[in-house]
Every structure is written in structure tokens, then in C-alpha cells.
Image 1 (cartoon, helix red, strand yellow):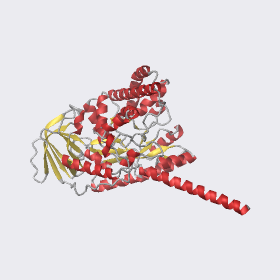
Image 2 (cartoon, one colour; image 1 turned 90 degrees about the vertical axis):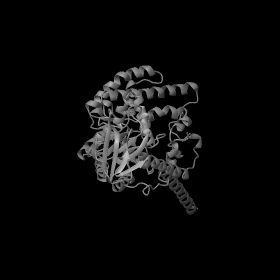
Image 3 (spheres, helix red, strand yellow; image 1 turned 60 degrees about the vertical axis):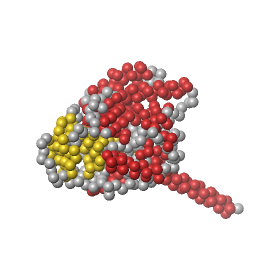
Image 4 (cartoon, helix red, strand yellow; image 1 turned 135 degrees about the horizontal axis):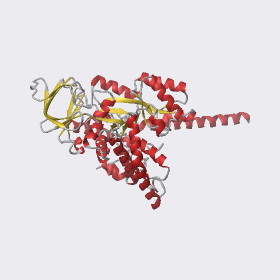
Length: 506
């Protein structure tokens, strides 16, 4: 009888272990699937060939401060570097010649907040949209390898790569976040020292701070990062703004991060007191902006995403029809049953999930309308106080389509009260200076990261979309090639769809 009981226990343990192992394997598969790596990677190497010398003639060139265009300029590019700039250049018979008459040359755009995940086709979505430099804000080893490949063959945007996000959870919670969020966890100084040294050795350009890091580990991270000469950027952790200003973190990843802190300071429901909160913010935003300016803390924007929350929450289908959904990687938008991580109805974490009552929905709508207005107010205060703003989109977060989203962001910055000149500066000069990279300006000795437009973006910010040519590294792609690239990515996406999206397309 005892042996029978033992066998039953063993069988039960084995069955339970099998279920747990199967559950873990399934969950791991789902988490990997939504990174987008299962979609076929399109190879454009046979279509795009390097050009040793390129000459753009008689073009309007954007000034280094983005305030105006300089007429009738000739730009000579050799081996991916601008070597001559000015009027009356002799025609170079060895060069690939491009007539820029009546057109507008701007620096290649920089998206300062993206999430590539493992969706490699996104690299060409950026280039197709004139985005020649990206800052990956939650890096992984595979993305470091992609950057090595781009540095070798030039086929892709330049990349600044921040580390996986930092968490300060202990025990099982730490393992959980490490697994599900691909994060780095440490809860004591010794582990922090090891983790940051590893980040530095792997070749990440910065440490990505996350919002749930406790004050002790925040301070420890800053100290050890400083010793290793690696900057800390990202979210504002669990500290107040006064502590944050003096912390040594050199950048905030979203204007939204600062705005949320003011909601906490306000201490009342902004759904019930919207105008009172906005009156409070009108004064507070200027104070915060001045403090950030004094401490030389930069801010990345992501304004369009914050504006989108209203549409995603209350009219998701219409919101999806506004974006270039067909180019977004299918597993990313389809999400996973584990949690609402996707973009589509029923899978989107921003959808309204409160009480199905008119009064509750009205309160929620008031909150998000006030929230969007607050983001605009904060963006304007930052610009007025000359805080360094870098245009970023949070690409691959729900409804934020890589490449296309930066043009949306520039419109949002313009609508927030920034001039078109300031908006373009935030996507060119500002990040170029911040990264200490020879990009973001049309200048002799700088990289040939350039975009040729048919219309003037200083007159209408939407004209950043009127792309005729994109120059990057030693390559140039024209409007016809861009259409070919986009069609190939669309076809690859269609081959990997489990959910039809026709009803959500424009």
C-alpha cells in the first residue's frame, strides 16, 4: 500500500513538473514570438549599391541652425563623407550626379527613442523614411550584432544602443522581470557593479534607467556608471523631481515622464479638476523646464504617442486606420495571450477597460484629454526655456510604426507650439550634438546622412515626407527604390500574418 502511495505521489509530481515545463516553454515561445523575429528578413543588398562619389547640384541646403535654406548649393560626397559644399563647384565627371534644382536638402533624421526588438526589417523602414540614425532604448546582444554588421557593410541606419532596462527587484520578482522584460536586475551594490561593468564591456552606449528603480539603487547606478564613464538615460525612477535634478542622469526618455510627476504633485483627480490642474501646470512647467535647463538634462519627446492614447482607448479601429499598419511587424501587432501587448482590438493594452458606464467613460475621456493638453504644455515650456529636446517616438509601442512615426512626431511637436525650425532641429542637430556624432548637420567633414525633399519643410512640417532621395553611409536610394523596399516588407509581413488586418487599413 505504501509503495502504491509513493508511486502516485511520484506520478503526480512528474505530471505537475511536465505541466510547468510545458507552460514555461509555451510562455517563453510567446515572449520570443512578439519580438517579431519570425518574420522573413528582406535582403536588399543586390538592389542597393555603394557610390564612391556623389554630387548633388543646385540644391537648397538647410542651414546648420535649421532656420533657413541656402540657395543654389552643390554638395560633393566621397566615401560617405561630405567633402565640398558651396556654389560654383566644377562638375565632377567621376560622380553620380543628382539635380537638386528646386528641391530641399536636410540632414538625415534621427529617431531618438526606438525599440527594434528583433524586427530587422524595421531598419529599412527607417531608411525609407529618411531616418538615418536611431537610438535603441532597450538594447539586446542581437542588436549589438546588427550594428556591427551595419558598420561593416553600411546597409542600415547608424545606431546608438542603450542597455536593457535596469530594475531593482529582488528574488523571484527579479528573475521574472529579467525573463519577461529582458531587463537587468540588481538590488545591492556588488551586483550593480558586476552588471554595469558587463554593460560597459558588451559595448552599450548608455544605461537605460527604468521607472520602478528604488532610490538606493538609482543612486548606486549613477555612481558606478560615472566610474565606468557610461551615461545614464531613460525614465525617472522612484524619486521626486528635486532629487532627480541633482542625480546625474543626463536625459529623460519621455516628456510624459515629467508630466506624470506633476500629476502626483497636484494630488487631486485631474478627471474632476482638469482646469485647476492645467492652471497649476502652467506655472509648474516653467519651473521644471528651468531646472532641467540649469542641470543640462535633455528630454526625448514621444508626444504623438501620448496624443494617441485617446484614440487607442476610445476609437481604436479609427486610430489604426490613421497609421501605416501594413508595414508593422505582424507578431508585434498581434500580441500574445499572456498579456495585452499587441496593437489590435482585444489585444491592445491602451483600450478602455473601465466600467461600461457613461459617467465612468466620461471621466476617463476627461483625464486623457487633459493629459494630452498637459503634454503639449510641458513640451512648449521645455522649448521656451531652451531645454534640449530630441524627437523620439517609442517605435514598436502600440500604433507607433517604425520610420513613419518620426514624421508624425514632428507634426505633434509643431502642434505643441514649437516652430518647424525647432522641430527639425530636434530630429537632426540636437541628437547629433548629444551623441557627439558627425551627423545632424550638412557640413564638410560630416557623414553624408542626408534627405532630399521636393517641398520646403520650414513652410509645412508635413513636407518632411516628400522624400526624393535618402543618402546614408556610401549609399543612396531614390523614391522608386523606396517604393520597392516598402512593397517587399509589406509582402514579407503578409506571409507571416495570423490575423487579417484589412478592416484596419487606410
